[in-house]
Image (cartoon, rainbow, N blue to C red; front, top):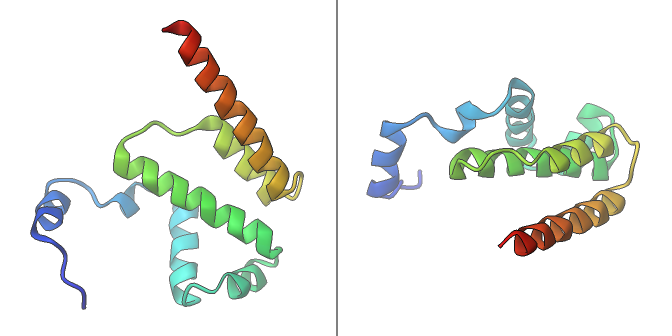
Length: 114
């Protein structure tokens, strides 16, 4: 097994593990991903969805996990776009384009406020 650096080990003892902060749905995806040995193709077959759809689901889980670790509040736009991709209402490329425009708008607004 891999050794956990001492500073990370102490940090984990002082707080809840980031995986435990994920929703039940996200934990289920992580569990199935590990059981599928990281195969998105196998995950897509298991959930009976396309590869891009399962990729978008995993990207959402990764984003949620990163937010849990960093303590940054969830990005509701990214969550909405991920849900739309998962339901097949928009393509992944469309969601990425919308998110990029949204983030640029946020950056513009924060620059004008300063």
